Length: 371
Image (cartoon, rainbow, N blue to C red; front, side, top):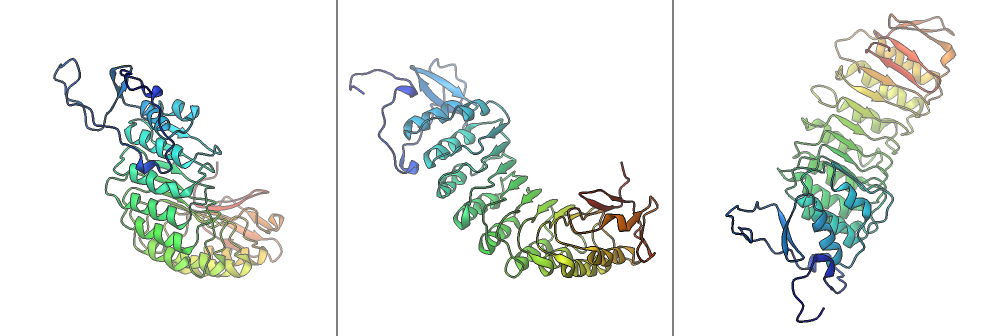
């Protein structure tokens, strides 16, 4: 750029390649009054950029995104520009670089309409999550973030944990599935959630959580009586029978959780026996939707669960128990609308107190009316 050039637009800046976006120049704050001197003050969270010599108010963050892409010598993503004008930014399987994620964060901090951000399997450098969440600090617009399939690791969880601890955090739905999270990562995240008052749904499925080291952390979190979490997905981990039964036991009493997924955790009949012990003695929420799909439970394990559900005790039972995709021979069991289940092989009838529905791919035991 020549020295005698006049005012130029953002797109005309010539910048050197920046290795670390945090070292790049920040946008200078706009003057308190516009150039025409009409006396109207500019809101603090507005970004005003010079564009062909004119001051432009950027309320959706698109100009800010273009500015930082140019500043960091990275190619803008057309999908992001399109989505910034709506309520959801969905850039899945795209391959966003460190600089690209930095530019997106700057745009989201300016934007006033985006509530959902989905970056599924798209972040090429998970170390950039620190600057991403640092920039979003104080954001009160975003309520849902999907970071599944990014292998964010411990450092990514630490950055996210700081964001969740903020009193201004309004995040209600967080998807961290398929990130190879370990017990250390889970501990960092769950400890932060004890102080969080906004999260309603957490997906930790398809990670490396195991029954020996992760379960105590999960149980401590659930016993802390977090008053906001409603849905927790722990499917496709290796919690095993002891881990799953301990987690279910932690829900006994006054717990707000209404949906717990423990599918594909390798329970088997041994785990089903442990689950049945909890079902027969624990005071579980009558609103709890418990999912135990694909856990290798056979007729033997199912009979133990039926026995636990049919016990007449003071404790509450789950609203619905999902046992599809197990090794249960459905032709053996006859379900009635009176909430009874008969074992055709032995002739025994179990009064489970709820309608029961069997399908080829799913067995549901529930207190809700069948549709």
